[in-house]
Amino acid sequence: MLKGGVIMDVVDADQAKIAEEAGACAVMALERVPADIRKDGGVARMSNPRMIKEIQDSVSIPVMAKVRIGHFVEAQVLQSLSIDFIDESEVLTPADETNHVDKFEFDAPFVCGATNLGEALRRIGEGAAMIRSKGEAGTGNVVEAVRHMREIVGGIKHLTTLSSTELPTAAKNLQAPLELVREVATAGWLPVPVFCAGGIATPADAALMMQLGAEGNFVGSGIFKSDDPERRAKAIVEATTHFNDPERIAAASEQLGEAMPGIEMAALGEDGRLAGRGW
Amino acid sequence: MLAVQGGFQRHVEHLREAGAEPVEVRLPTELEDLDGLILPGGESTTINMGIEKAGLAPAILAHHEAGRPVLGTCAGMIVAGKEHLDLIEITTRRNAFGRQLASFEDDIEVEGIVEGKIRAVFIRAPWVESTGDGVEVLAEVRDHPVAVRQGTVTALSFHPELTPDNRIHLWFSELCAA
Image (cartoon, chains in turn brown, red):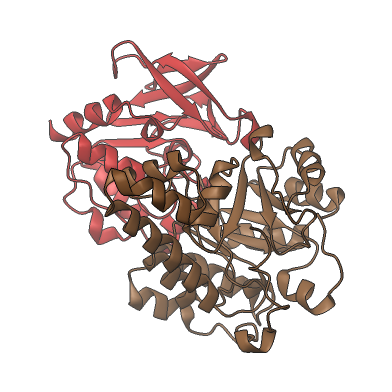
């Protein structure tokens, strides 16, 4: 039960312990945080199982790990390690440019990224148990996460205003399964939790995403690429819980040191954007 | 409704359906004058830290000592136990039934709370490892207690808010109104 919590990227057992002690509700085990994946280039793949096991042994909170989009064997491997959640992630280099993993084939739950409602519903239609915004990982710039969260939440609101006769066309335009579109139009929310990911660097960023409708936050490079990871991790947890309380967010933001250096979207160019991966 | 972290939103919806007026509690002052408190499922380490950081423990103890009911579900059971808030004389084992993959559902009877069986959803659920003298065991799964009560404090290993069945929230709302 991860809602209302913060899931932190960690690259080893020591970082995992820092994350747990700071109040993370789960950790994402990966070999390089997105900012380093960006910097190093090359093909980014599933993490080494030994590293994942070491992290599983070091903390009592759930451990997640990433697989490349469409790489169902990496997912089989993670499931065999009893991983708690599999993230089919655009942060890694895609393995299949046409198909995502058939997530119904697995017992382990999946989280998938989305940039808009149609994409979120396609992933849920493939069996995802949780959706997160893609944002733009490793940039420390929250602008894309805001765009994606507004697209998803706005798309849901729009569906609730439609009559039943309009829903088949809406499903066609969203390129999403009609049954799911009907369900969302009636319920006014997705059938799975929606978290934010991709660019959160400060406590205020985390609270912003919660106020925009996220049910929890993933923070990647933002913590361990900052000056004082321990304190920043705690502050981001605090801001995620008390997201409507500016005084507490202010108090948590004092004495944090420098946030990770950010990247302006225009500086990335189209090729540098990870959110375009997946379909 | 403790709202530090975890699955409190569905509890809030179930309480509303049951005719109660739920209030989300993140700060000590928000707990004053409430008739009952639910400690939700979530990550118990995260919830315990959130309670500590917000200075909520004294307010929860005062609520309990005033004889107002408390219901802990899943991680909330751990938080209510002896190792943490000590509202009920139980010790618990975290993730006792296994990791996420070992999550399961079962139809169980919870003595004295609901008539007949109720669908119980166990997600990385704890079980009760030991109980003090005054603790009643209301349900067991695989020979381990998963529902216990002592006075006004009830603790469940499972998530009653994740099924449409509203009977546990009705029972708790009535208990708080009484």
